[in-house]
Image (cartoon, rainbow, N blue to C red; front, top):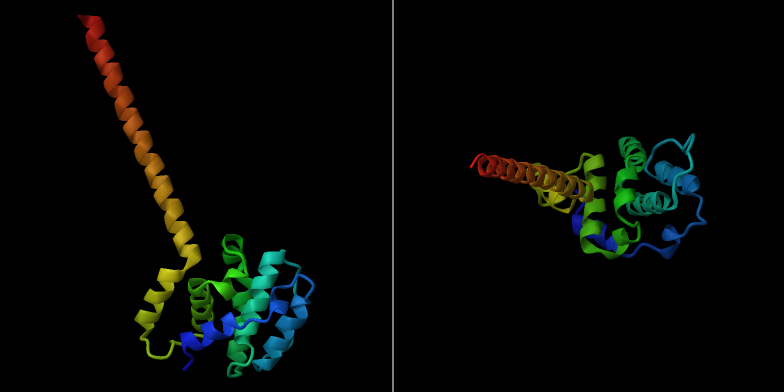
Amino acid sequence: MTSVPALTRRLADTPPDFLADDVSVAAVVSDTLVALGGPPLAHWPERDANLSRLILVTCWLAHGQDPAPDRAEALHALCTELGTLADLVDAARFTTDPDRREELARLLLRAWRTTPAGETPAQAEDRLSTVDSVRRHRVLAESRAAEQRAEAVRQAMADRRAEEAAARYSQV
């Protein structure tokens, strides 16, 4: 079993080259897939700079782990799904911020269908939900929308009371 602290330590030790813009992401992803026991990369489309750096950091995290073809496949799938996360968080924070390191480590373990050492699946999912940037962003957006709806209702009620008061006053 892989421990979250071991993975977060690895992220803290990420070489600066994995955050550079002049690295061939396709080559690093392909090498990592092969190291994990999978086939080399067949095609890799260009991505924006932050997403590319996040993919590089994820490959750094995955490289050197126990090889298994399903892990290579899961890593490839995870790398293609990191776009939303990259839209919200700068890739460098996944090497410097403890919560972001934990988030990426847990995302990788979940992609590999591996429960972190010393945790139950429920504990692992609960802990991921507490550090999940995408989920937090969605909850905040939903909260803002609910507050805007509530404010619109309050304003409509205030307008209605003002209209009723004006109607009563004009009838006097």
